[in-house]
Amino acid sequence: DTGVSQNPRHKITKRGQNVTFRCDPISEHNRLYWYRQTLGQGPEFLTYFQNEAQLEKSRLLSDRFSAERPKGSFSTLEIQRTEQGDSAMYLCASSLEVGAEAFFGQGTRLTVV
Amino acid sequence: GQNIDQPTEMTATEGAIVQINCTYQTSGFNGLFWYQQHAGEAPTFLSYNVLDGLEEKGRFSSFLSRSKGYSYLLLKELQMKDSASYLCAVRKGGATNKLIFGTGTLLAVQP
Image (tube, rainbow over all chains, first blue to last red; front, side, top):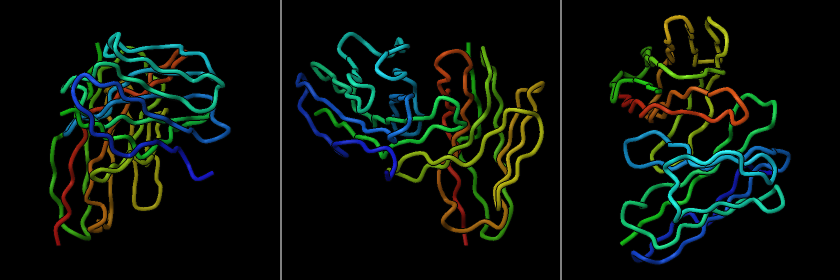
């Protein structure tokens, strides 16, 4: 296992289109996080899964955003009716239940034109 | 509320030592993390403090004072490859253990 994997690395989409990103965490990690990062800012928490259960969603996550982790392994983040303000780097991270640190994927850079 | 402050930018010279400070005010605390992030790449873990004091890890050390809401990251023997953004993050307690990040400090190492 080489770490947290995210696909695609880059996505350019037209405003109003739907997009879906995938995250494959480190295999034994049962905690999975999604963060969003804009230029010059630190990552902002979006949502958290423990196994397949989505236990917390940030108020940043509007109704257009939905995340799933159906089998407690990979996760998807979908954005419906994208807006230009959704342009950002979307980062996924995973950690062990009792581990100290979260490991981040390379991120998916979304550009909405 | 929660607030994490760190300088926006710093410049240092190759071979020197630099200290990046971070102050925080958060509701809930379960550890402070430092991550390094090169442009366009993922944050990578550098250090973790949950108790007061200094943690040393090679050229990198991190200090925490919980009573003062203060941490610093110390980088010694700076190398050009250390030019990056350094992110201070507080881990909230509870079921989520999510990280709350500062805006990051962009460090430029000059020859």
